[in-house]
Length: 107
Image 1 (spheres, helix red, strand yellow):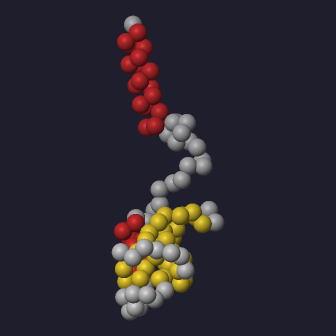
Image 2: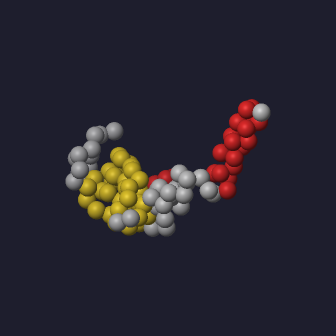
Image 3: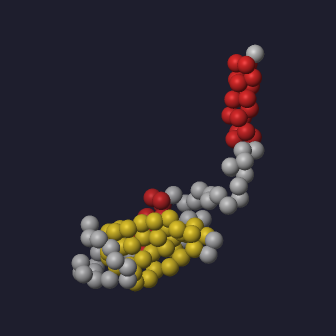
């Protein structure tokens, strides 16, 4: 009888995520997966600033998810300023292109 109760409880526990009733999944503060893939965002950033990606990250800015890419432009000398390109993780659009003044390791 104990084994039957355990199996029933385990089955219910496994079914909750499928029903969307899992308490952890119901938390509204949990970050949703971006609509745009990292590879799509990379391609968009490199169309905006052709070059080599030095650093990439998924960030939250003003409540929105954005991919941030630090790019060394192809046309720029090795010691030139890097560019930071931000791409919306929701729409795939370029949000901004700015000079990046942060410290980055050479790759």
